[in-house]
Length: 196
Ligand SMILES: Nc1nc(=O)c(N)c(NC[C@H](O)[C@H](O)[C@H](O)COP(=O)(O)O)[nH]1
Ligand SMILES: [Zn+2]
Image (tube, rainbow, N blue to C red; front, side, top):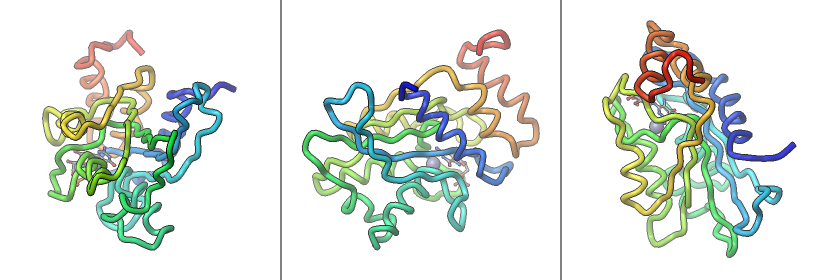
């Protein structure tokens, strides 16, 4: 089977399905890997960590848990994850997340885009690029700013189309009117009822 961006986003969707449904956040799955610069088939990818919303204690996000899981294996606190991420010539750190990393959280906790940017602190290579399956709907924080925060820090990002409906259905499963929210988010993307 060929490995592509959608393969990895489906893996993240499987992670997101493990997240306990809540009305106050989205169920998201995240994956961190190291990829060779000269490997178009992704056959030499090394998966470094995964995470999903609320996997770890407290009000935790998928990307936060992904970093936290990697940090704990290397015996450092999550905020120091940048210092233990592998830096290897000819390889880049890539993240896949079902939803655009958040740029603002109603709880006030550090948003995921900020945590991703932080991996470049102190001149470290950090995360090179983030692939996600859907932009964050406006449900909680209105127009999403995660992507702009990544761009401002020189981190590339890319929306991989095709799984929007499934990702949104999983993300909003704990919400009051998930179907309505999914329909509205898809319409906003111009993927009306007929689009998939
Ligand atoms: N990228 C991302 N990964 C997640 O795991 C998750 N739950 C969100 N959700 C974004 C949404 O904007 C926030 O969940 C709300 O703003 C509420 O904020 P808290 O989650 O309580 O901090 N976004
Ligand atoms: Zn987040």
